[in-house]
Image (cartoon, rainbow, N blue to C red; front, side):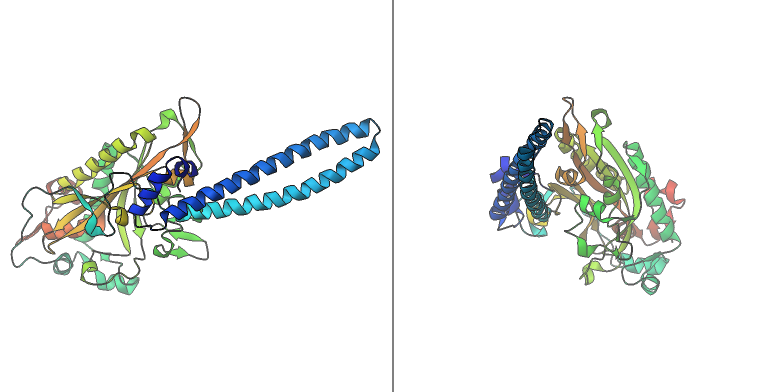
Length: 425
């Protein structure tokens, strides 16, 4: 959630940034927020004045009774009664304005950083780091991963659909072991990078989903357990970041670096066609997530460190990749800047997104009331960041397709100690 002070102090910057996202009404939206905050301040000032008068009258009434001036005391009590009525009205007004103000702020996305490119669709994204070597080519007999899965009995989409529905693959044999190997590999690499491993819950309450920005923006994309008012997590970012909701960290606690493996659940309503075939788009997938809480002045450097961490994973898996800097129109609702990693699928001859790494600045921490006590003793909002490191479904697809040979599928060298086998045959 944007800070009102941020909108006041950098109004032009905020408007231009929101317009970069394609919000044509950005100027009016920002003005509405500032006007509501002005109204809140005015009501609060009147309320404070009334409360001060009530306190003063309460003291006077006591003194009047003590001095025997009962008639004056009764008149003062009448005045107190009238002030309490006015105070009650003001309290209702400020409560209503605060709700309206919060709702408007919840509907406003984050302001993109200045280096975020303009644009409205993924076609306007900027290649931040390209693959410089020749892209891999396969022979005419090469197969897409869904056909490889059928040949080598790696995963079963039909049985998964029978059990749950379309988009819920059943991994078997080599496929199940490959999934487990990748999870352990990614977690070990995260631990080596200084991230503390956690195993969070897979369902979260409404406060948690709102705290990281999934609500109200992504309400329709999450699975909801109505009876218990709980949401299945779309990413481990949600429970991991919420560990620090309503927490004031000490300066020495920063940076916070945590990671966790979870299944992730996304409805992906309306997804269909060849581009979502096989593991390209599923409703349940495994992912290792890395999350950081940083001092504001260190968050950009932390973001670069996270990019290097994900790059190292893809290089270890011997997969060709590129990094995109997302344009304003393709940027996630809560992010100030996002870099997407895409792996080239030699069989499908296209790029597949396998990771997003984002800096949310104070957008999430303002919702979460996640602060740290600075050296001057003041509480300040921290910056939050997160990244996929990595999402397994498309990584599995990429390994199968890019490492297929006439003899089977060759396992990347660094992954062999985790799989216990060198080939899928």
